[in-house]
Image (tube, rainbow over all chains, first blue to last red; front, side):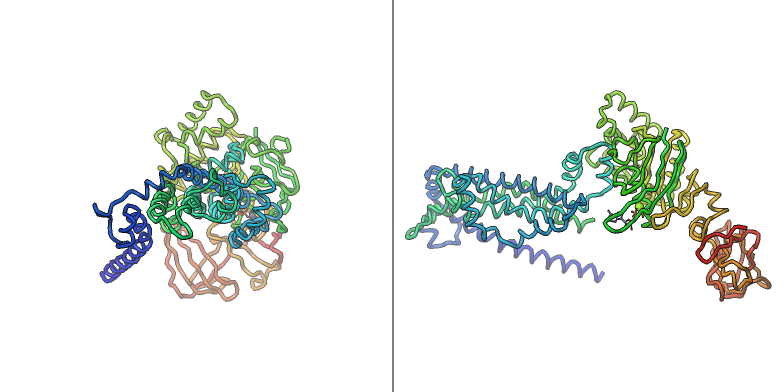
Length: 279
Length: 333
Ligand SMILES: Nc1ncnc2c1ncn2[C@@H]1O[C@H](COP(=O)(O)OP(=O)(O)O)[C@@H](O)[C@H]1O
Ligand SMILES: [Mg+2]
C-alpha cells in the first residue's frame, strides 16, 4: 500500500522531470519553426507569438527556394551524411567484430588505438587533413567530407559495437561454423541482425554531428556545387544585415531530413538503450 | 563409421595450458561422456574435436584421418550446444536444413532428411515456428534434430541439458539415449553432472584440470576407482573418506560409500553425533559429525529414525572399502 503510493509519486516526479526536459529541448526548435512563418517585423516585435493571419508570411521560404541551389545543398548534406553513416556502420561493425571475435597479437593495443579517437577531436588535424586533400585533389568534393566524417565517426562506433558484439552468443557463431557458414555470412547474417539496436544507437550519434557540421564543409568543400545545407544557410547571415526570415526557414527545412532519419532509427535505438533494463 | 582418436593432445591459451596431453580412443557407435568439475577443460577438448579451437600439439584423428587442420564444416561432425544456438531468423525447418544447404545438397534430399529427423523427435507441429516462439525443451529438441539431419560421423554434445528444468532434463536424457540406440552413432557428451554421465555413457572419461584421471565403463569407475578424485566424483551422495591411521590401518585414506557404513545407537568403531537427517522415502541419509574424520554420510534403505544431536556409532564394511595412499592413488592388493 505504502510502496504503491510511493511508486506513484516517483513516477509522477519522473514524468514531470522528463516533460520539463522535453519542453526545454524542444523550445528552440519551436521558436525557429514559428518564426520562420512570420514577417520580419513580427519576428522582432513578438518573437514568441504564434503566426497570426496578419503576421503570417512565407517570404523566408520563398527566398530560400529562390536562392536556387538550395535543393542542391540538401542533396549534398544528405549524400555526405548517408554516405558517411554507411561507411561508419560498415567498417565500424567489421572492426568491432574482428576485435571481439578473433584472438590475435596486438588485439588489445589495436582496440585502444582505435578508441583513442573518441578523446582526440579530429579538428586538431585540420591543417594536415587539408594538405592531404589538396595533394590528392579532393578539395571541393563530397568525397573529402565523407572520408573525414567516416574517420571521425569510427572510434565511437567501434567502441560501442565491440561491447555489444562480445555479448553475442559464441555458441551461435560456432553453430554457424559447423554448418559451414563463412565468417562473412556469420558476420552479416547472424551477428549484425542481433546488434541492430547498437547499430541504430551509433547511427544517431554519428549522424547528427555530421549533419550539423560547419567546419569541414567550410574548409574542405566551400564551392557552390558541394555546399552543405548548414554552409548554404550562412549566405543569409551577412556581416551587416542578416536575412532572418531566410535563415529561420533554412534551419526549419534542415530539421526535416534528420528528423526522418531519426524516426527510422529510433525504434531500434530505444531497444538498444533499454536492452539491459528490460531483461 | 566414426572412430575418434586423440593422441597427446594439448591446448594452450596464451601462457596457460588448459589441456595437458590427452590420449583417448572413442570407438564406432560408442557413447562417451566427458565428466569433470567446472573449468577442467571439457568444453575446450570438445571444441578442439569440433575444430572450433586450434590444437596446440598432438593429433586428432577421425576414422584414421588426421583432421587437425580441417574446417569444422568439413569434419562430418554435428554439435549440440548448451544454449541451443538456433538461428533466430530462420524457421525450425530452415534451421535444420541449413547445414545440408551449405554443402550443396539437392533440395529434395534436404526436405527428406529434415522430415525424417522431425518425425524422430516429434517436431512436425513446430516446423514453421521461429526459435523465439518455442520453449527451452522444444528448442533443444530442434537443436538435436539439426544435428541428426547432417548424418554426421560424430555427434558432440556440450552440456545440452544444463539449461532445462529437472523434469525436462530427465525426459530429454531418455530421448538422447533412445536416439543413440536408433542411430547407432558415435557420440561424445560433456557434462558436469555425474548422474547424466552414469546413466548415458558406455564409457566415461573423468577429467581434472586438463588431464584424464580415469577412463572406463560407469560401473568400473564406481566399483573400481583409480584415485580419490574419481572415487569422490562418481556416486551420489559422495564417498566418505576416513583417516586410516585412527582406524589402525596401514594406508593413508580409506574410502567407503555411504551405503556401506553401518549405523548403531549402541556400538561400533567410530563415535559421532547426528548433525542432520534427510528422509527421502526410499532411503534415509544421515549426516554424522565425527571427531576424527569430519562429516560422514550414512545411507540406509527404507525409513529410519535417528535423534538429531544424539550419539551414534558407525562401522565401515571393510570388505567394501577402498584404500588410497597419501597422493590419493588407489592401493590395490
Ligand atoms: N578463449 C579462452 N581464453 C582463455 N582461457 C580460456 C578460454 N576458453 C576457456 N579458457 C579456460 O580454459 C579452462 C577450461 O575451460 P572449459 O573448457 O570451458 O571448462 P569446462 O567446460 O570444463 O567447464 C578454464 O579455466 C577457462 O578459463
Ligand atoms: Mg563447459
